[in-house]
Length: 425
Image (cartoon, rainbow, N blue to C red):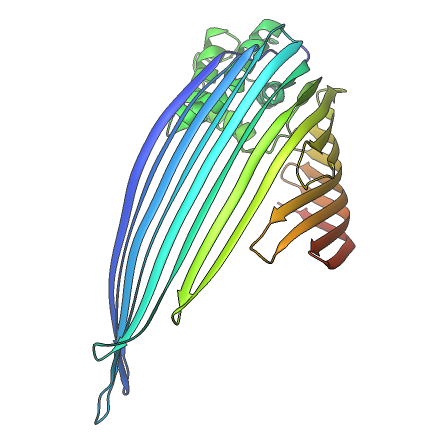
């Protein structure tokens, strides 16, 4: 894994779609007749453009979603003085999200700069009306607007790579070796050639509607070119064995280390208006974040199967009423021997503080502390025994301070789960 290098990968896509529905439903009984009519229209648009290699990466992602719908329900009672009632509602919503990220190394495998920005917005509106025999009775509406945006930039030192592709390729080679499809051992250069293909799995996933088809085709073509197979061409059985690997859950293999520091500026704002029975309710919330973020990450592969990853992050407020430091510590030790044995031991601690501006009379601090330990084991002997075992412990505390009021809640507990399955034949 130490020899793995991020291959150059370019990917882009552009999607748009529209879906609609219409329904007309009638029902009734001895006392009442019902008629329901509904229609709905949704549209979507998304685009992505990205690039990755050892010393540079960028990503630009855009998404736009909208929905329009209308529904009416009318019913009449069978009586000497029939009374007809009708209710109708309509709604529309739209959301837009933009995300951009760019990072590059000033010194290969050492000093780098990064920047990222996110902008998102949501608008929703719905109205409901009721009348009887064309006489208006009541109506109300609900309007919701949300806007969020953030900007981060900074620098770091070190290099970290996700070498999961190495494990994917080794698993493929193991499976084909078990069934005797190879005429010789693959060289290190040949293995790294396959690793470069699998490492670009993200490119296949984004660039193709059916990505697995093209990914497997490139892997198989390279195996045939290497002249390591007993048969002249790959059989359907071998294709299935290779595809099995991509259906397994393989833990990330982060290798290397990095430390970084930067600024994070963000704002979340939401407004809600509700007009019911001629009275308008208004709610407004705003949360500002102005932090210096420092973090350190380390990943090490003790062997192909045993891996350790840890990360520590501190968010230090720069100015404003938010004056407490957010902390998060995570450490994960995993052991994965192919599909037979998976073990994950995870420790996580987080301390999050949030100052939130509310309406005229409501503003509060929120503190959240969390600590958890989880160990999960899975042992699988193909076609015979499957055993799973998980134990977890958690301890949480929440504190809300609103003006002069304070509310504190705690929760903790421990869980144990296990399972055993045996296949006789």
